[in-house]
Amino acid sequence: MKNALVTGGSRGIGRAVCIKLAASGNHIIINYRSNDAEAEKTAELVKEAGGTAELLKFDVADKAAIQTVLGTWIENNKDKPIEILVNNAGIRKDNLMLMMPDSDWEDVLHTNLDSFFYITKLALPSMMFKKFGRIVNVVSLSGVKGMAGQVNYSASKAAVIGATKALAQEVARRGVTVNCVAPGFIKTDMTDDINEGQFQQVIPMKRFGEADEVAEVVAFLASKASSYITGEVINVNGGLHT
Image (cartoon, rainbow, N blue to C red):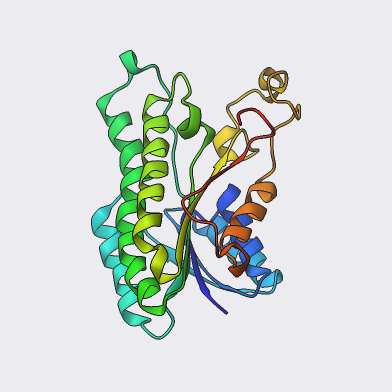
Protein backbone atom coordinates (compact mmCIF):
# COMPACT_ATOMS: atom_id res chain seq x y z
CA MET A 1 0.00 0.00 0.00
CA LYS A 2 1.32 3.41 -1.00
CA ASN A 3 0.28 6.83 0.25
CA ALA A 4 -1.19 8.91 -2.56
CA LEU A 5 -1.96 12.60 -2.10
CA VAL A 6 -4.52 13.98 -4.54
CA THR A 7 -5.10 17.73 -4.43
CA GLY A 8 -8.57 18.94 -5.29
CA GLY A 9 -9.74 15.41 -4.64
CA SER A 10 -13.28 16.02 -3.46
CA ARG A 11 -14.97 16.31 -6.88
CA GLY A 12 -14.61 15.92 -10.63
CA ILE A 13 -11.34 14.56 -12.01
CA GLY A 14 -9.81 14.57 -8.54
CA ARG A 15 -12.53 12.31 -7.16
CA ALA A 16 -12.22 9.94 -10.12
CA VAL A 17 -8.45 9.78 -9.58
CA CYS A 18 -8.90 9.02 -5.87
CA ILE A 19 -11.25 6.14 -6.66
CA LYS A 20 -9.01 4.74 -9.40
CA LEU A 21 -5.90 4.84 -7.22
CA ALA A 22 -7.84 3.26 -4.38
CA ALA A 23 -8.75 0.31 -6.61
CA SER A 24 -5.03 -0.53 -6.68
CA GLY A 25 -5.01 -0.71 -2.88
CA ASN A 26 -3.46 2.67 -2.16
CA HIS A 27 -4.12 4.83 0.87
CA ILE A 28 -5.62 8.07 -0.45
CA ILE A 29 -4.99 11.43 1.17
CA ILE A 30 -7.78 13.61 -0.13
CA ASN A 31 -6.97 17.30 -0.18
CA TYR A 32 -9.83 19.76 -0.49
CA ARG A 33 -10.47 23.40 0.29
CA SER A 34 -13.96 23.85 1.71
CA ASN A 35 -16.68 21.34 0.80
CA ASP A 36 -16.67 18.90 3.71
CA ALA A 37 -19.69 16.94 2.45
CA GLU A 38 -18.18 16.25 -0.97
CA ALA A 39 -14.84 15.31 0.56
CA GLU A 40 -16.53 12.85 2.90
CA LYS A 41 -18.41 11.40 -0.06
CA THR A 42 -15.13 10.88 -1.93
CA ALA A 43 -13.67 9.15 1.12
CA GLU A 44 -16.62 6.74 1.20
CA LEU A 45 -16.22 6.00 -2.51
CA VAL A 46 -12.52 5.33 -1.97
CA LYS A 47 -13.34 2.80 0.73
CA GLU A 48 -15.93 1.14 -1.51
CA ALA A 49 -13.23 0.83 -4.18
CA GLY A 50 -10.99 -1.11 -1.82
CA GLY A 51 -8.68 1.61 -0.55
CA THR A 52 -8.39 3.61 2.64
CA ALA A 53 -8.73 7.36 2.94
CA GLU A 54 -8.13 10.38 5.08
CA LEU A 55 -8.97 14.03 4.54
CA LEU A 56 -6.47 16.89 4.50
CA LYS A 57 -8.18 20.26 4.34
CA PHE A 58 -6.18 23.25 3.12
CA ASP A 59 -6.23 25.81 0.34
CA VAL A 60 -3.53 24.98 -2.23
CA ALA A 61 -3.34 28.69 -3.10
CA ASP A 62 -2.20 29.50 0.43
CA LYS A 63 1.53 28.92 0.93
CA ALA A 64 1.26 29.22 4.70
CA ALA A 65 -1.56 26.66 4.83
CA ILE A 66 0.46 24.22 2.72
CA GLN A 67 3.43 24.56 5.06
CA THR A 68 1.29 24.26 8.19
CA VAL A 69 -1.16 21.50 7.27
CA LEU A 70 0.75 19.39 4.76
CA GLY A 71 4.10 20.10 6.38
CA THR A 72 2.78 18.95 9.75
CA TRP A 73 1.26 15.80 8.22
CA ILE A 74 4.59 14.89 6.61
CA GLU A 75 6.46 15.52 9.88
CA ASN A 76 4.01 13.32 11.79
CA ASN A 77 4.05 10.48 9.25
CA LYS A 78 7.73 9.89 8.53
CA ASP A 79 7.14 6.15 8.59
CA LYS A 80 4.57 6.32 5.76
CA PRO A 81 5.67 9.03 3.31
CA ILE A 82 3.81 10.22 0.25
CA GLU A 83 4.94 8.13 -2.72
CA ILE A 84 2.31 9.24 -5.23
CA LEU A 85 1.44 12.91 -5.70
CA VAL A 86 -1.28 14.05 -8.06
CA ASN A 87 -1.34 17.83 -8.41
CA ASN A 88 -4.89 18.18 -9.64
CA ALA A 89 -6.39 21.21 -7.88
CA GLY A 90 -7.07 24.12 -10.20
CA ILE A 91 -9.41 26.99 -10.97
CA ARG A 92 -10.52 28.97 -14.03
CA LYS A 93 -11.35 32.67 -14.16
CA ASP A 94 -11.85 33.31 -17.85
CA ASN A 95 -11.78 36.73 -19.47
CA LEU A 96 -10.11 38.54 -22.32
CA MET A 97 -6.74 39.85 -21.19
CA LEU A 98 -7.71 43.47 -21.82
CA MET A 99 -10.58 43.11 -19.34
CA MET A 100 -8.94 40.73 -16.87
CA PRO A 101 -8.64 42.06 -13.30
CA ASP A 102 -5.21 41.66 -11.74
CA SER A 103 -6.81 39.55 -9.03
CA ASP A 104 -8.01 36.97 -11.59
CA TRP A 105 -4.48 36.61 -12.94
CA GLU A 106 -3.01 36.28 -9.45
CA ASP A 107 -5.65 33.87 -8.13
CA VAL A 108 -5.26 31.47 -11.03
CA LEU A 109 -1.46 31.53 -10.91
CA HIS A 110 -1.41 30.99 -7.13
CA THR A 111 -3.84 28.07 -7.31
CA ASN A 112 -2.61 26.33 -10.45
CA LEU A 113 1.12 27.06 -10.49
CA ASP A 114 2.36 28.05 -7.04
CA SER A 115 0.61 25.05 -5.49
CA PHE A 116 2.59 22.71 -7.74
CA PHE A 117 5.86 24.20 -6.48
CA TYR A 118 5.14 24.33 -2.76
CA ILE A 119 3.36 20.98 -2.48
CA THR A 120 5.81 19.07 -4.66
CA LYS A 121 8.76 20.58 -2.81
CA LEU A 122 7.42 19.17 0.47
CA ALA A 123 6.64 15.71 -0.91
CA LEU A 124 9.82 15.26 -2.95
CA PRO A 125 12.50 14.65 -0.26
CA SER A 126 11.02 11.35 0.93
CA MET A 127 10.59 10.15 -2.66
CA MET A 128 14.24 10.91 -3.37
CA PHE A 129 15.29 9.11 -0.19
CA LYS A 130 13.23 5.99 -0.98
CA LYS A 131 14.26 6.08 -4.65
CA PHE A 132 10.65 5.82 -5.73
CA GLY A 133 8.04 8.42 -6.52
CA ARG A 134 5.29 9.22 -8.96
CA ILE A 135 4.31 12.84 -9.56
CA VAL A 136 1.44 13.44 -11.96
CA ASN A 137 0.40 16.98 -12.78
CA VAL A 138 -3.05 17.51 -14.22
CA VAL A 139 -2.68 20.35 -16.70
CA SER A 140 -4.94 21.18 -19.63
CA LEU A 141 -5.38 21.48 -23.36
CA SER A 142 -5.18 25.22 -22.66
CA GLY A 143 -1.62 24.83 -21.44
CA VAL A 144 -0.62 22.86 -24.53
CA LYS A 145 -2.08 25.06 -27.27
CA GLY A 146 -3.44 28.18 -25.54
CA MET A 147 -7.09 29.19 -25.51
CA ALA A 148 -8.54 32.63 -26.17
CA GLY A 149 -10.12 34.05 -23.03
CA GLN A 150 -7.82 31.98 -20.84
CA VAL A 151 -4.53 33.86 -20.80
CA ASN A 152 -4.21 33.30 -17.05
CA TYR A 153 -5.28 29.65 -17.12
CA SER A 154 -3.18 28.84 -20.19
CA ALA A 155 -0.15 30.54 -18.67
CA SER A 156 -0.47 28.61 -15.41
CA LYS A 157 -0.85 25.23 -17.07
CA ALA A 158 1.90 25.86 -19.65
CA ALA A 159 4.22 26.81 -16.79
CA VAL A 160 3.49 23.54 -14.99
CA ILE A 161 4.28 21.65 -18.19
CA GLY A 162 7.66 23.37 -18.44
CA ALA A 163 8.36 22.78 -14.76
CA THR A 164 7.42 19.11 -15.16
CA LYS A 165 9.92 18.60 -17.96
CA ALA A 166 12.67 20.30 -15.95
CA LEU A 167 11.95 18.50 -12.67
CA ALA A 168 11.76 15.14 -14.44
CA GLN A 169 15.40 15.55 -15.46
CA GLU A 170 16.45 16.53 -11.95
CA VAL A 171 14.97 13.50 -10.18
CA ALA A 172 15.02 10.69 -12.74
CA ARG A 173 18.18 9.10 -11.37
CA ARG A 174 16.43 8.57 -8.02
CA GLY A 175 13.54 6.59 -9.48
CA VAL A 176 11.09 9.48 -9.37
CA THR A 177 9.00 10.16 -12.48
CA VAL A 178 7.21 13.43 -13.23
CA ASN A 179 4.56 13.60 -15.94
CA CYS A 180 1.54 15.59 -17.05
CA VAL A 181 -1.94 14.60 -18.11
CA ALA A 182 -3.62 17.26 -20.25
CA PRO A 183 -7.40 16.85 -20.41
CA GLY A 184 -9.47 18.57 -23.06
CA PHE A 185 -13.18 19.16 -22.45
CA ILE A 186 -14.17 16.84 -19.59
CA LYS A 187 -17.58 16.67 -17.94
CA THR A 188 -16.95 18.19 -14.51
CA ASP A 189 -18.10 21.13 -12.41
CA MET A 190 -15.41 23.20 -14.12
CA THR A 191 -17.06 22.78 -17.53
CA ASP A 192 -20.67 23.18 -16.41
CA ASP A 193 -20.72 26.66 -17.96
CA ILE A 194 -19.50 25.38 -21.37
CA ASN A 195 -22.03 24.35 -24.02
CA GLU A 196 -21.02 20.84 -25.09
CA GLY A 197 -23.03 21.06 -28.30
CA GLN A 198 -21.06 24.12 -29.36
CA PHE A 199 -17.79 22.17 -29.31
CA GLN A 200 -18.95 18.76 -30.52
CA GLN A 201 -18.31 19.71 -34.14
CA VAL A 202 -14.62 20.43 -33.52
CA ILE A 203 -13.93 17.40 -31.32
CA PRO A 204 -13.23 14.39 -33.56
CA MET A 205 -14.90 12.05 -31.05
CA LYS A 206 -17.97 14.35 -31.00
CA ARG A 207 -18.30 14.41 -27.23
CA PHE A 208 -16.81 15.65 -23.98
CA GLY A 209 -14.68 13.20 -22.04
CA GLU A 210 -15.48 11.59 -18.72
CA ALA A 211 -13.47 12.08 -15.55
CA ASP A 212 -12.86 8.33 -15.37
CA GLU A 213 -11.09 8.46 -18.74
CA VAL A 214 -8.59 10.95 -17.34
CA ALA A 215 -8.22 8.99 -14.11
CA GLU A 216 -7.20 5.87 -16.04
CA VAL A 217 -4.20 7.69 -17.50
CA VAL A 218 -3.26 9.23 -14.16
CA ALA A 219 -3.41 5.81 -12.50
CA PHE A 220 -1.11 4.33 -15.15
CA LEU A 221 1.45 7.12 -14.68
CA ALA A 222 1.23 6.59 -10.92
CA SER A 223 1.98 2.89 -11.21
CA LYS A 224 5.19 0.88 -11.50
CA ALA A 225 4.18 0.03 -15.07
CA SER A 226 5.15 3.57 -16.14
CA SER A 227 8.65 3.38 -14.67
CA TYR A 228 10.43 4.38 -17.91
CA ILE A 229 8.13 7.30 -18.76
CA THR A 230 9.02 10.74 -17.44
CA GLY A 231 8.83 14.35 -18.55
CA GLU A 232 5.89 13.57 -20.81
CA VAL A 233 2.53 15.22 -21.49
CA ILE A 234 -0.27 12.82 -22.34
CA ASN A 235 -3.26 14.47 -23.99
CA VAL A 236 -6.75 13.19 -23.19
CA ASN A 237 -8.91 15.30 -25.49
CA GLY A 238 -10.76 13.11 -27.97
CA GLY A 239 -8.43 14.12 -30.79
CA LEU A 240 -9.12 17.83 -30.49
CA HIS A 241 -5.41 18.62 -30.44
CA THR A 242 -2.47 16.30 -31.05
